[in-house]
Length: 244
Image (cartoon, rainbow, N blue to C red):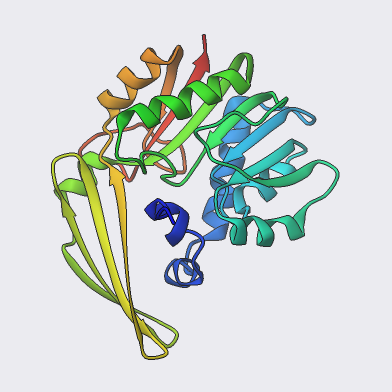
């Protein structure tokens, strides 16, 4: 049997959600509301939340009056998100490298560093080309990514996190192309080891990638409050681009 790609296995694991259970849902809600205001989105527009996880951003987008589809590769996450479904909010298991058949959107959002999981940069282009195909003319793309420059410069190499009854031992490294996070822990007498691997895509890398895939970059921000981006100090790299 072919091994799953690392993200397909780890993101669908209950231990992934346990490790990251302290994520700030109010911060995520505020970020989405800022985006809706900045983009001047109006009720009834169609939005794709690509790599939606358990749907926290999708739910807020829908509460703003938007028609939302949340898509993610992890079946367990989609099953949890689907409990919030309604007439204008739905969820599908989907690989972001592929087009969702017969669906078109005014905006596609890819939030919380849900890009660059792949070994090949060709897969990044597959993602962007699929998004391009699904967007309406002049449709908008929002990518919220880590600020790779700052992450590399401030990398915490070793860390231990206690979450409920589990001790996660975390180590980080950068190999010149990818940032790795090795996660080891024991549960019920069994040892586990997962490795997150994300391409260290910089502002300039994204600019070239978006240009190659027929997007026009129109704005960058450096945090969830949409302050200006600064490579040395910003927490995030948030890009707003328009389909050409």
